[in-house]
Image 1: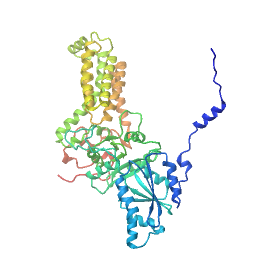
Image 2 (image 1 turned 135 degrees about the horizontal axis):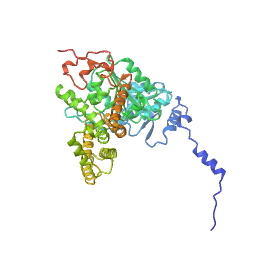
Image 3 (image 1 turned 45 degrees about the vertical axis):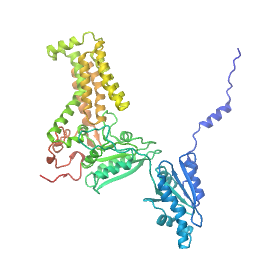
Image 4 (image 1 turned 120 degrees about the horizontal axis):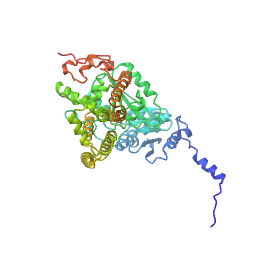
Length: 526
């Protein structure tokens, strides 16, 4: 058998090495300055977009002098009817009719201003003298108009693409409240804010983040209520963001948050406009990201994660009772499995005799210690929750309910777990779902697992130490300079009216002190 050895050709290495070298970017090959020659400007655009099949280049002549013009836009980002009826037709047909009527021609040196003042019939017109700005606007859905003899471009507004209509917020369903939520289109979301708050002092500013994505990011606040220092702090943090892509509001949240070493969110995330407006009226800032249906609230306290818009649509006694249940459920969801493991493993004497005998009888035949039993059941619940969230809505609900019943019953019958453990894990899961904010709920659920390990190692003493550590950690967190645990730490009695107990509406005359608003008075009635 003849063995053929592959020769190592150094020339091949050179060729491969050359191919692996990074290719120069379009902006590295093109002079970004505009010239008065249409062909040169046209070629500069083509250097960027000629390889893109969705880029449209349209050259035409204007008037009897046949002044060279060109349109450049991205197919799918503009309304073609606007391009045809409000831009091309007036320039190619109406100008000729106008010249015939006045028995004169449009001179090249008059063409630029004449087009802006008398020809184009779109609502918004901009001018730019740089190629990079023009390219950014074209990629954002605008139309660039090049006119021969001018070293600046006319940018015409003709944006139009398929969008999702307003729908009921999926992550924040309420029984009594608005049925509309934010969408993936930034201007639709800012319009929702304007429709709900017609105060001219509401300021909405837009910036672009992402070196390559050029994502539009808007932040809104009420001038005269929001503290200027808070606005400056947000603007400073946004100015430091230097990344290729801003994919969503959650992505931006992680880039500007105070503390990355905590499972709990430091900004409230919502897709409800009514909740967003309520936060604006308290002196907070709202951040919206294009292509994301969620808004970020800055700053945020831990107590806000237990508030729901429907709390303010019910009588204060009912709302206070429901809110108290949420707080109790969160404590139950975090500590109950750990306390059970600690008591069963190290402190059975704390359990009443009959209950202790019942638990011992239920655990006969279970081959695992309580910590392994609890972790396996908790992981099973998390798997069912995650699979139910990823599957289609109807199937996901079925998987969650049927899967939980079948797996729990099968585990008990097989002797892999005790009935009391199934009950504790099920109640813990239900309690965690009571928390209105998803990001806070999943953060609290994550804390259960290290607590269970501590309980299995140190017993109730470990659970108490963990409780103290969690409180120290929560007190140390800040959200844009504001204490995360206000109004508890530091204690602010004015803000206690909207804490665990929600006070009567007529008693909540002042805004929360926690966000340091300029204007504290929000109600002047008895």
